[in-house]
Image (cartoon, rainbow, N blue to C red; front, side, top):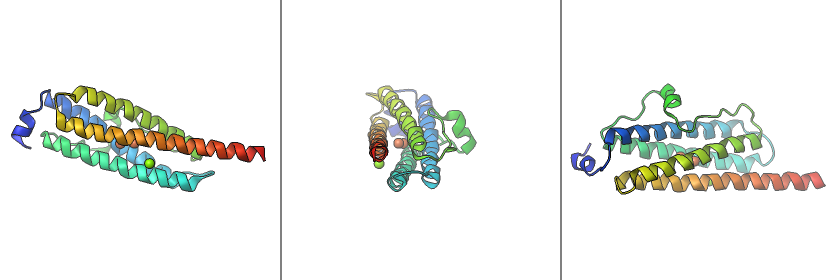
Length: 168
Ligand code: FE
Ligand code: FE
Ligand code: MG
């Protein structure tokens, strides 16, 4: 940890580490939800959906990495016990027990909408107080906004295709 780097943080660093660890737990759960979703998803247009899920899984894992690096810079320890992710998470985890493509998309859209709200709150919390964390959170938020839009576009394509098929 860098002492001056921590000294310029104009907020309670222990509290900041805590909220970053909560987001870090969310990212691992989001990563796994996408990763396993891409394996099991079934139904129409699943090829396009799998490609999107795999891409998003990689993004969530990168977000976990960004948060871990920041937690370490601040002198904290990233949550080391996977079972603790369930205790720390803001957005939870939805197992793809129903592999139908629309159900998987709905579960992940819900997750992205929770992530967007969580990172918006973190932006407000760090604004003007910790520009380094603020910048990391802003980058992640931009990705989550893109993820939601991607999944909603997949859902629209799927609904268009299904209704066109229904008319034939
Ligand atoms: Fe993420
Ligand atoms: Fe995301
Ligand atoms: Mg995408």
